[in-house]
Length: 186
Image (cartoon, rainbow, N blue to C red; front, side):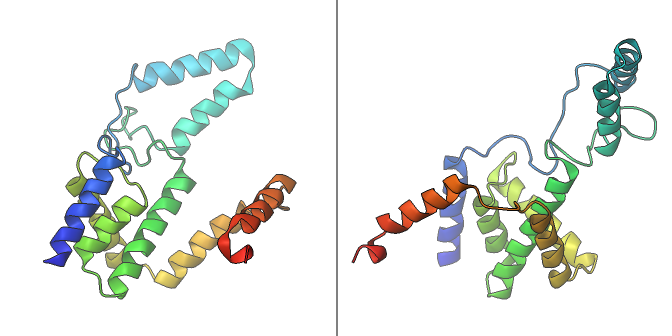
């Protein structure tokens, strides 16, 4: 019974965060032009101006796998508003979050609900977002993803983007926070 109460509280938290809307993992995209017209225009602008950025935009469309084998905009984009590496990182972290809670005895339903709120995963409804997270979790399990390998993959992404040095402003802010906490004032 307590599980139902916690689920209802998580649903309310999700609603309060304003996450109802597009699915984070599978958004619906309404394009303003056909893919062939868009790519032709980018190619024309690249040829006309000699500006490499127009060509780079064509490459980005391909990297995001936004066009299907027939040359049309994909109805089920492989990615969304997040670049592929960030989307994969979010998927990995989502899997690890659910796995962590399940391994500590949480039901899969509750672990997915907790993850949806903690990771601020949007969706058409709270239930739909939870179901999407559950499908992601089950896919990782079915594919035999080893938790240790997923964690290492996640950490390697973090390390690649780790700054060479910490900005002075951050150090000053951290020191001021330490002085402001009660355990450092007594």
